Image 1 (cartoon, rainbow, N blue to C red):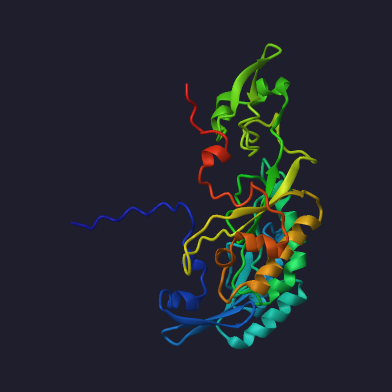
Image 2 (spheres, one colour):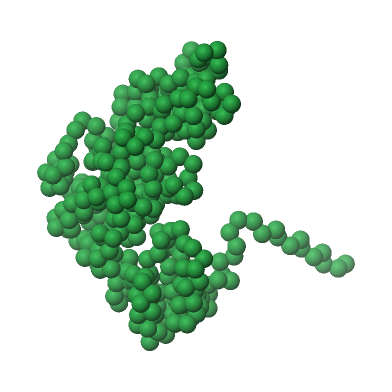
Length: 358
């Protein structure tokens, strides 16, 4: 009996990454012995077979145009081995099997205006959310904040002078798609949404909007005989979650939309337990195009961390050691009762449960 031919798998999700990997990486997959860090922006991985591969990392913007992509690929074809990858923080990495190619590659990247760095104990490239370009609910331009801050922090990206790696994130709304970071810059709405009652019935699916509110602050209503929605401002936490399904509930405001800075977020459990980030500065002016007030606070926190932290302490480890009172004393940031909430007793700090009780 003839062997039945197996049905060919239907490719879904991410494509097979091996077809894009450097040949030496495929050959030694899972067989790496050690790695070292010859200079900022360069890593060397050594396999058990004795093969070595060098990785050169350069910072790029998250939203790339086709001309920049072609330029980066041309550099890879000419000076590297034609294999590249992008990191989760929007850096591009070139892999080369010959150490003699490293210096010409770095020179080519820097001549083209790309900054080599972001490895070891440096300030990594700031990750950010979509911002005004793609997101439907942005309160600020997250990519603009990143550009303004990285212009000020570029020396910390190029060098490895920090006690440990520093991850900074930005988010253009309070949903915080940017995720946790050692330092996070998020939008902070300070007023409940303003409702255009004439448009709600035509634009919004009201049950979905009611269900989306995390603190049950929205309920159906009638205004001038038209079906609409109303907000219980005593419950509202100004998160902006109602705005995507209902644009007439406008929460963005040039005066009342601010920035807030959080610190101490950490996913890793290498040296301590993972930790949530905590609020340390709020009500910062959302002041494009350079956001000088937010940038100054971030630089102040980094300077104190750099001067006071011990080797290999992440920001959360440093704060755990010195304590929050000392942190605010060193940074000179004002402390209020709203800061460093650890979510114990959140029923009081968030005003209401998400469950509706009849």
